[in-house]
Image (cartoon, rainbow, N blue to C red; front, side, top):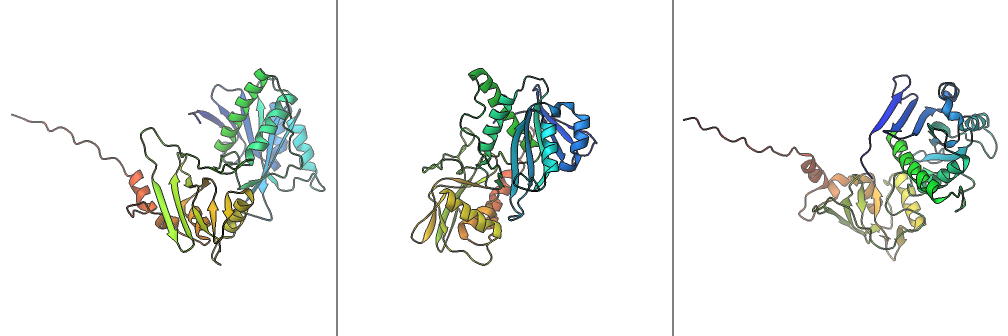
Length: 320
């Protein structure tokens, strides 16, 4: 990741309405809008009729705490979206679709082959975030959108900027979650810290579980490889946590041992309470349950991190 400046244009001056986001000095732009605003977007932004990639976003009706994202490409994104919008029945129905992000180039150098390559890369990238599911019935082949090396390098930058723009618009489907991917690592992943800075390690132990957690550069709470989670759950466990634990077992992040679940790799959680609930198998206040080796709670540690650094005392002026 690197620092980037992003310009966001609000068509109506309303942050919840039509938006166009662009990284400074880039030709890639993301147009975000609601499904019912498609006609207006097509009338306003002619570039949506060019080749590009689109993301249809909604909520999973079976699991309301999970999002759905369909990723596609077209030689004319606007026309393709109109087709999707008119088809709410059958196998290709996009009934879940509510929000939209379209990614196109301001110049006219993007081709269908380029778009296919970007689509393929983005579909693979979503697999690392368990909060999202993809209804794409056909996953791209490894050679989808095969390009010459110079074009591939340019499209890799397109993919990288797409992830940044979609995240800046409020959707975290491309956010990398440690421990989930096509191949789950079986060794511990090193936690990155600033040079010379030692990562704080928190502990959470009880009957049937013993886990360690640290905080990553992006603020995520990372339960470390080798941690033990309680195999049984209680009636107070959040429904989403149950689904997450089942998914982690399915993905191989949690391995079933004799009387506990073992983390085979580091895994990111959005909060200390989410991490504690997954480890304990019950609703938990992780802010007070995770503790440093000296007994300090996560809440106290966080307050200390956010405390204003005392300024150096001003030098005294001596008057003769």
